[in-house]
Length: 239
Image (tube, rainbow, N blue to C red; front, side, top):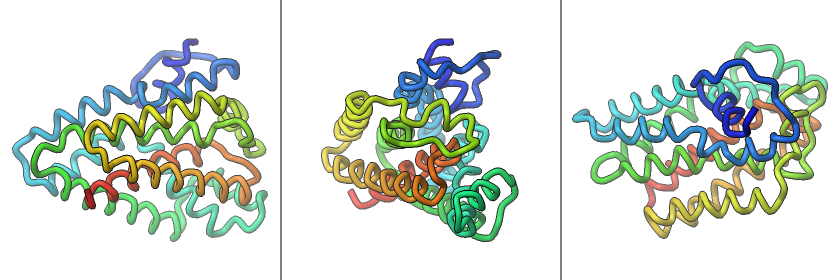
């Protein structure tokens, strides 16, 4: 399968048919994550023009993104939070990640994540905000290359982790991150600072989860995307 098809299947709800993931295409597929969610970005950009109160529109945009990604990334936020809170050993963390239910830490983390996104969007939306919102959707997906860069190990027993962890060459990862930073800088030059903050937050998440989980998996990827998106939106409110 083509890397783009793999990226679309991994990061969106868009059907692409049956496919057999190929480790050789993993790096390119992860680097194409921002392009894979272009239909979602276009959708939310169009939604910014709806004649609705900013808070209502913010809720609808967050809901649309959840639907467009099968809510996989939001589920990952809860799973990672629960595993970090209760997984004192890599084995215990793996059990929690595979359990599928939501504990108190996961529920709180998910609620805080959604509230931060909605509140930030409600602040950003009045005025000419479509470019900022669309760019944040695209650029947040660049976080995947930090999770999957060379040197990052897959979590034991993680099929997706085994396929993508360590698959992105450092030069390709740097190019993707620079492109994402440049895109937001076109909207607002000060957004460079916010983007760097997002990359640092994701790098911190990868460091912590690699240590606590003995590697990364699909949940870490999803949580990284939501973390980057939230940091970008919250940071944008200060610009």
